[in-house]
Length: 595
Image (cartoon, rainbow, N blue to C red; front, side):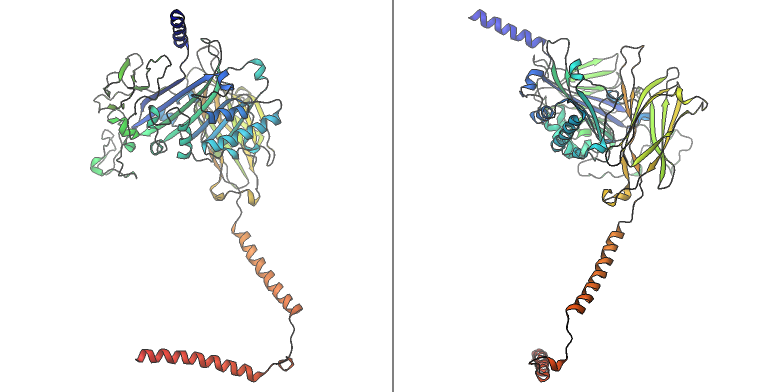
């Protein structure tokens, strides 16, 4: 019996040694130019596919798991984003843009269904359930805001060939949605420690939504690793934000940022046009001293869970700074440096708080950020309330390699583009034919009040060139009931999604995603005070007409002497009595005043 027990224990240890961790969390910090800090939070949870289908939830929460099972969703990607990523100053996007969404809310999923109509019904069910779970307006993603991309997205998880044949991809956006603390709280509730311990304890709504740019993402997909015999369901949550260090360090008793006094400003006096009357800011990325408590308002409250089921403590916090810079950490943490990549990582203590501080450095060295493979911007052109145009500038910074990508736009139904006006020109070589730039076009026209316009282009930009993509569109006139309360503000148009294809010559290259900023479309807006004026005028006319006609039809005019029991003397006596009562009251008040 003892031998059997030892053998069983050894088998358990062997299985635990080869099993994958069920929960991991990681935080990566990287200083950016102009005194900014990029913070990337990553949380991974997984469960076996069999236990997930049997609703044995442990690290993947039941609230989300049951929604996916009820809607037959095999792969889900949800994004909450606000702000704008400054690619010219900050470089390439974190996670190659795969964890980033457009402004507002963006969601796409692969749903298992036999027909497209059945997939649409399950898509509506999924959005309504996610709307209640994350306190967002996902229930407004109807058929007019839903598209079916063809070339832009591919499944990230591992799906069999038989299941892929029954999967339908649906994509929806809400660029008008405002991301706030109501979305962060349900996001933290999905974590094992609910934001009470581990690196998630740094996620404070006051800091997150005060950032220059922030994005929250949730990805659920099936994964079949080669090291295991079966498949798992993996849920990955990420939070990326760009914080202003000086702005985040303001004291708690000063919640409203105020400009610093003139004697505390640090100016760049090396410029020839510098003077005592004007102060030009200096890049203080490496000169500023900061700590986790300064930036996030609190230290990390210990470790959330044993990051590995074997009990080993893995690295949870990493920072990218020059190797010669000093970084101080709390006692009980273990530091591991990587001189080749200028990364240093820390293993968090299990029970004690973890604090990390960077003092003011004498060295001005700043780690260079990788440049993005493509710069993209989009704006409106034209004038007037009837027609307009869209212009997209796509710049390839590489001096010797062309860039091929998919350009995907989702336009509302009231924004009707003219496909024959689509033009693509290279700024340096306008004589180059459009066929050399646009390889293929997928166009799905809009139907009024039923679906929007879907446009997918396969584009190739030559080295060191800028492609100018333009087309014209017509603005539709809506019914007055279809305008929002703030109609004069305009209508938000979803950002364009750009998917850069991996290089066939480089097997290690991966797809990169970019998103432009959203647009604000101004439509012909009626004077909403006119219905009120019409209602008041009509009501007045009807009241006067009805009253006059009613009096003529019902009222009867007779003489005073014809009324029975009518006595003029009685009426005069009653009037005199009323006047006498009033006179007596006034006389009594005067007597009281004289006394």
